[in-house]
Amino acid sequence: QVHVVESGGGLVQPGGSLRLSCAASGFPFSGYTMSWYRRAPGKERALVATITGDGRITNYADFVKGRFTISRDNAKNTVDLQMNSLKPEDTAVYLCNALAVDGYSKYDYWGQGTQVTVSS
Image (tube, rainbow, N blue to C red; front, side):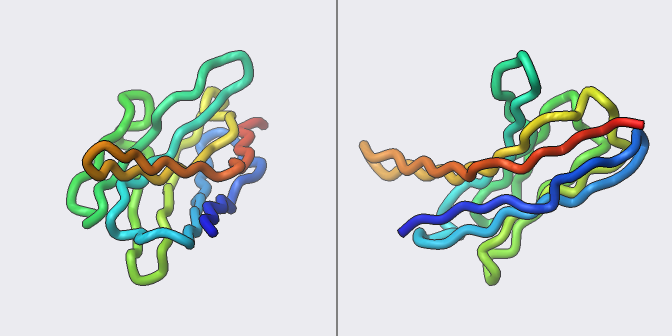
């Protein structure tokens, strides 16, 4: 059974930091591209950061470049998002996604999300 579980959200002041973690099980983790998305109030879900299965390639949305860092530990089946210099506009539910494509099959798993609130 597939599980994708986020943790680490909370309330932080502007300029502060948080580290989100996503623990996965039930699928071959190292074969999946892992991503963090976010869903802010009144806005559509947006891609935040992506990391390839081997961890060699990362990509970031322009609005987090230089502030957020995605990393993964394939031995522990986890992917983290280090968020620094947080801004009120970073307030959102952050969701972890696992994606793999094999021929004509697409495997796409989501967690329930963790709330991040940036406010003074």
